[in-house]
Image 1: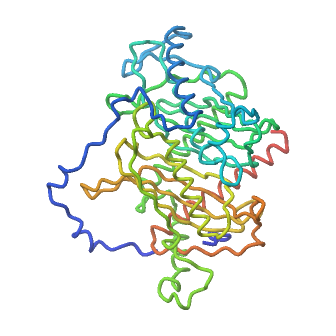
Image 2: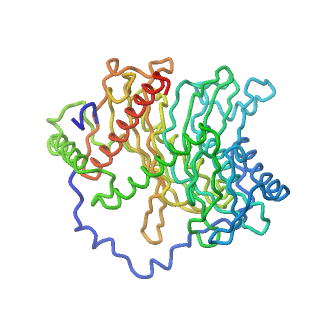
Length: 461
């Protein structure tokens, strides 16, 4: 039952570990992780919108200092001045005026080879706008308070409802919907000028860190008053609790995965189904392919131009690079131009510093003709970003990205499942099988949430 609709592993032994023991001198060779010293001035490689948004952060800080307190302040445990803020106080928006002929240079930065809006650039700008909103909510009117470091913790599902065009104006907006002690959720929307219905919605979660200690820092609370604000706050609280429960389940799981007993059993079953391809490949189904044969890789050095206002590497830059590699992976795998459908989930585990050697590894986790509610064939791609430290022979996972693509019918519309035969991806190890099942279960949960939401909407709830 758990594997129905899934078209898509022994653990490696420990015998090789002895060869990985390093001389003590190796630890002295590794450079320290650093925050770029000129952190007040972010990198200038960014899109015009990102540059504009980061200028807004400085302007927001100056206005807060000039206006003073708007509510009764209190002191945090770190000595910062805290107040309750409304969602409107930090809400922000930005508009791409592509319809204006004078903005041809702007349009050129956002158009892809097929004349459509570049998805990677949109992801980059969404993160910048969400970060600007988070910065505004956490800002203090006390000039003695040092700015907190605002870190992207996760991004919930980003789904395209229709294809935006660079011939139309695009409007991005967002506001704070939930605040915990040190974390906050930002609800984001993107819409085209010809429609009031957003073509994209998502939730970004940010965490505030003390700039000196790096520990979680208490932030301003959120004052909600309208029924809509209260409902959004409650939904945000529920999502926050679900994320914490998932992390706790992963911590307790021997595989480090958020899988229950049924999920682990499904992973073993998936691994068993690939036995023929792994052991007798000449007798296997021609429509099967091992997961490691779908991989692509990209390695780069994080440059100062990629930094944000905190001196770390900009999360939106990482999202864009991950998307571009995922797009290429789906293209090579499917043999047709991929059509972006959604960014399922992004997990930011640790920051990336200027000068870090960053490697992106992508693979196709699974394919399906049944997961999508509209019956479209889907290719599910995972991208893992690792920070490499060659001097220590170490690699640390920084980010995990999950994308879903359709395959184009030639007119930029995803093909339906019955119109194309996708190869079935088979895991080689139990670890790979667990990754597949965890993502597959997450996708099924999202589909069910959509159905519940649609039923509630049809009843006027």
